[in-house]
Every structure is written in C-alpha cells, then in structure tokens.
Length: 110
Length: 173
Image (cartoon, rainbow over all chains, first blue to last red):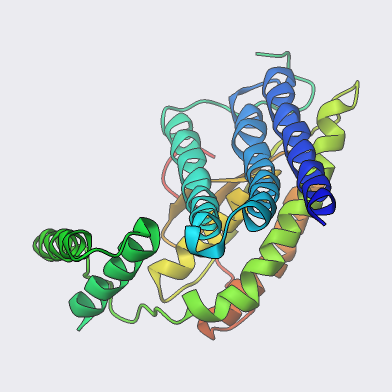
C-alpha cells in the first residue's frame, strides 16, 4: 500500500516542481516588471499547493496523525496562500506608485 | 469578547503547532498568547470597521475557497502554455473595475483572489475602484465579466451586480 501512496505523492511533487520551474522560466521570458510579477508570484501558488499535497500524502503514510505534521503542512500552505498575493500586490503597487508604465504588446522588451 | 476569543484561538493554534502537552509548555503558551492579545489590544489590532463580518471565513471554506482553488488550477494551465509558447503570446492590459463592499475582510478576499489566480494582479485598491494588471485580453474580459465578484459578494450577502460609476482615481491613467 505504501508504494501506491508514495507514487501518487511523487507525482504531485514532480508536477509541483515543473510548475515552479515554469514560473522561473516565465520570470525570465516576460518583457517587463508587471508581467514578470505574474510568473514569479503566481507560479508559486499552484506549485506550493501541489508540493504540499504530495508532502501531506507522505506524512499521512509515514507518521501517526498525532505527529501533527499533516496539520502543520496544511497551515503552511494556507499561510503562503494569504501572504504570497499580498507580497505580489505590495511590489506591483510600489512600481505603479513610482510611475512605471506597463508594457504593451509591440513595445520592445525591457 | 473579541479579545477573549482571540486568546483561545491563539492558544488552540499553539497547542496544534506544539504537539507537546506538558504543563510547562502549555503554561508558556498561555502566557505568550495573553501577552500577544495584550499588545494587540493596545495597538488596536482588534478594532474592525463597523459592519465587518467574521462569518465569511467559515462559509467560504466550503463554497468559495474550493472554487478559487479550481480557478488557480485552470488559470495556471493557461499561463503555463503561454510561458512555454515560442512566441510568448501575451497582451498585457491595465483595467479598472468597480467594487462595493461593507467589510474590509471581503475587500481583501476579492483583491487577494484576483492576485492568486494567475494572469491577474491587483495593483491598487482605492475608494471602490481596483486597478488590475492582466496578462492577456481574455483575463481582462473574464475579470470584467465578474463571476468572482458575484461569488465574493454572495459571501457577505450583498448585491451581486457590479456597481456602476466613473472609473477615475487620482493620478495618471
């Protein structure tokens, strides 16, 4: 039974890693600051969710529930879901406040 | 009342995170929580704007958050495709949308949900107008369509229609 759970967990972890890498690639490929924010800030939310699901599956299989690892992972996930968009918003608002003009289709890369 | 419930919520969180239930550690937790509540009270952390509601936190857990998670998934696949597409087919827009809310919590829900779903970032929240940067035209149209707005409004039991009005806020366009 353990092998099944670990395989599914591995699948989630792998998917999470792929999404995280996509976020990084996007951050390099995008043409300006705001569009980079999209990739850097949000690829993480899904990657984080997938990786946490994988880890929770492993924790369920490997430890007794009284170990509390499952709950802690769950709370970390919730915490990132709240703080990540807040940070992205703060950074983007800072740029807007500073007068950074958003890139439009057709402009040269910055 | 709010202060007392805050204390117990914090203490429950402490116990859940600690996992060791010796008298010393529980005592240390109680003292820490009491201190945090005391500081928070003096700093005015527990003062909410009149009319703000706490219950959306609980109703949203079963209806709203699963839907947002699904949206995060769907939207991520779209951004995923665009990032790996050789031509990088994006068409960024800066759109303004009106919103109406009785509570700061719901406003935060809405702004954070917009930022959470890939392809849209809330850039500013001011006087009933949100400025949102979107990665593509479709993202902008979906946002103006307002399904997320309706769902957020349902949480606080408000009118689902987006308020009409001028979309001007201070500063440049």
